[in-house]
Length: 206
Image (cartoon, rainbow, N blue to C red; front, side, top):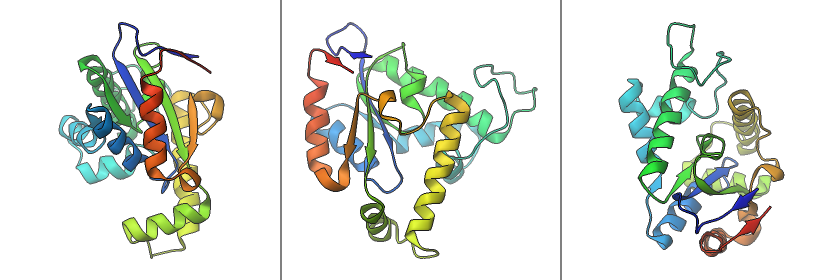
């Protein structure tokens, strides 16, 4: 796998992340540092507008709920598609359109898989220890209905299953990314700095 930011295609950073690792924040800050758009909340809103589903539903169910349709590339909605299948088709098209517009950062939504062979991507996976992530979701999201650790395990399990179902790839497997960063050890700002520097490298061999 080679990342070549000086090629003719648009340069894209995709951020895959464990729940509670701060990947969304890292993506946003990296985009700000590079002066390019970050598509996260905007992507969710676009999917919601085109699908007719509420943005909260897209946010909660569109990335970690396993659908039941086996051919996600076809767009015929008469073939027994689930809500998640419909969201997959729409988000795939929107991500491809956004990548064509210019350099950007895209958080989640299997963008690394969707853009494979179609854009010049730097694919990153952000992770952290269970302790760091548990502390973060309590602080950032006020998670208190159940133990933070249980919530994290459930979220990660669903996200991995979703990724496997629609991409046939192992979520979080290092060989599927150009770089994996431990945000708990490195810190958010260091992760941002690393991704920003890699973005400007001529060639990265992985």
